Length: 228
Image (cartoon, rainbow, N blue to C red):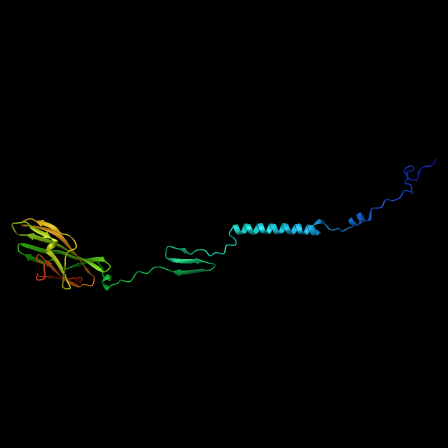
């Protein structure tokens, strides 16, 4: 019995069957130690693009969070007048406002000042008695001179007790009261009232006219210095 040499005989491989060889290009591709995709030029470009995209996203996120903020912080005012400038280093400047110096020596005096009182002036049937005299600060360069006066009317008729009966002589000039005293004192009675003048703060003495006023009227000298 004869058989073709290409078939097996009883499980034995015929020695005449030709061996199959792989193509040369396929064998080259399967050489040991072949390079992966990331070592090729397209793989390198793809990886580089991914890294650049990740870095750009990180920079944008840090910028939005203020990490790259370079503007200096504003100075913070604290209640005690000290300013702290936060610009990388701390610097402090004491800006506490100092009290202004008085424009006049008279502004350093303690006011009010109680002056001597008790003097009496008789004009006709009326008697004026100074109950008190007080000097106080009116404005930065002015003083207030206030007299509390009691008028006693000994006439049988009512008498006026008003500001027109008072003048203050300052440096040869007569000044009228600032307030408008206007009272009526009944016969054989008394009434108290206030008379106020505003004077410069550098005056040391004045003259008070009561009852009779004018250039030739008598003057009661008032010392504006505090009694010792």
